Length: 283
Image (cartoon, rainbow, N blue to C red; front, side):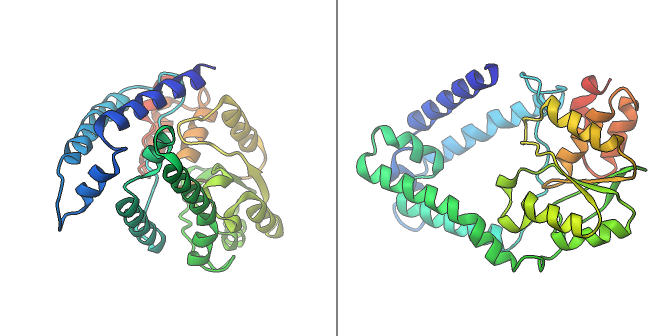
């Protein structure tokens, strides 16, 4: 309940900020993007005003063990420049320039945008629903993706990696792993990388498959318990998410009390995973 009330309060504050800053004014947004015409620079203050408090907030967060409601802070996403990111960015920018709305203001505009605002919102939702299929098409047929697997051993019996492909399962079996744990929710992936397809590939390779999805910033005690259960089984465990960060966090929390906080934090730091905010909980 506390999390829902917090989300409601923060969402209301964000919506109020959108309205007061003029982000729901399509003419002002289009004026900001019209750099070769009648450019309106006022939204520069909105962007700058958003960056400043976030910079301060992240500095504070870096010194805190967890968020106010007890969940770990999300770590780096491991995003990289690829064809999907470039095409998606161009389409987003074009749509923003043509309509003067992006997702947040589009939802806020339901209260005053009339039929046009509703049509835009429905079209935006349709585009989001089509995106996974388009992304899968861009990335190539199932099983033919370029592998992003990078085995990062946090301990003798546990390793993490950014998102892997079904074709990587045979290699994991050959590397001596007994099971694969997916810490990435299916909603983040196209169908050919979701748990059903990955489990089928793991089973075919002779690996146990565990689906333990961790939502960024919302890791639960259930997630930790499920990861600990997998770690207690015989044989080395391999886990993956978008970047490996969530898989390292949930592993460290599952090992809390068994290994020292310094050792767990150092293991993550070797691969760029910052577990320092979890220090108090790891103790």
